[in-house]
Amino acid sequence: MNILLALLFLLAAGAGTGVVLTRDPRRQIFAIAANGLVLTVLFFALQAPDVALSELAVGTAATPLLFLVTLAAVRRNRARQ
Amino acid sequence: MKQWLKLALLAVAGCSLVWPVWRIARALPPFGEPTGNYGPEVNRLGPPLRHISNMVSAVNFDFRGIDTLGEEFMLLAAVTGTVLLLRGIRGEDTSAAPDIIAGRALAGRAESTTVICRLLGPLTVLFGLYMAAHATVTPGGGFQGGVVIASGFLLLYLGEDYSAWRELIRSHIVAALEGGGALLFALAGFLPLAEGHAYMENTLPLGDFKDVFSGGLMLVENVGVAFAVAAGFTMLFLEFMEETRSLEGDGDK
Image (spheres, rainbow over the protein chains, first blue to last red):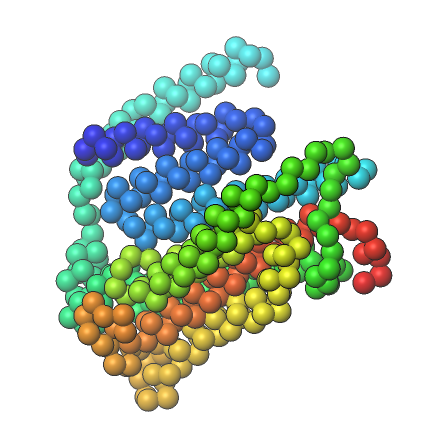
């Protein structure tokens, strides 16, 4: 295992912990997106470009967007009550 | 539960895990060492047997193609279920405006955002199409290309606004693409049956190594997956975003 992979593993652990420790839902969504980006780079460094592409599109664009929209819908419904 | 009791429980659990984890860690093969024969065999057999250079596609669409067909229909079922749950009585009306929470400041889009999104959105869609079409040559494929296409559509939402996006993305077209893509994949498997081969056996001409039109049947299945995934994700985005639209005058539609 080279130094780059070791750093990326540490970064992935850090980003994952960051997602857990973030308590505000809106910030947490961006933490999830950041974690997805770190995982993308990690998969790429591990020579799995196909998985990296999927993770990039799903983990940093699609999933965070669905969470953000859900949050907006929840807030809207609360504001109406 | 008392605080000290929790900590004691944690300590006992942690201590009892140390020895097994140590044993397992010592018994693991060295990092990065291939453990099975499957990967190297696929790498060795792929180019001569299927004339393609992306072995992930060879596994996904040929050697284990039937698994991917199952996954394709899992995606179809998941998207259909989500649409059924979310759409409800809302129907397919495209005229609703986005809802505004009273008292929240509404900042408009910067013009630079619109310009960048208008430039990058179509380019992203084009890149997704490229990635899907080159599945047998370079990394990526129908799924990756499809998701990239869907995120290109999202950039159009970011650059314009909800109403423009709603005008652009028509749910019946997206639904037809989603179902049609899955159908194309399933039907592609029947093509060899008509010639007396097994289901999904790769009987089409295989083309040249490292050429876009290589891999035979894989390319057809791949196009089906690209359509289905792009449309499936766009459908999800659409139905989720419809949840934030204004409910005024929605009563009896």
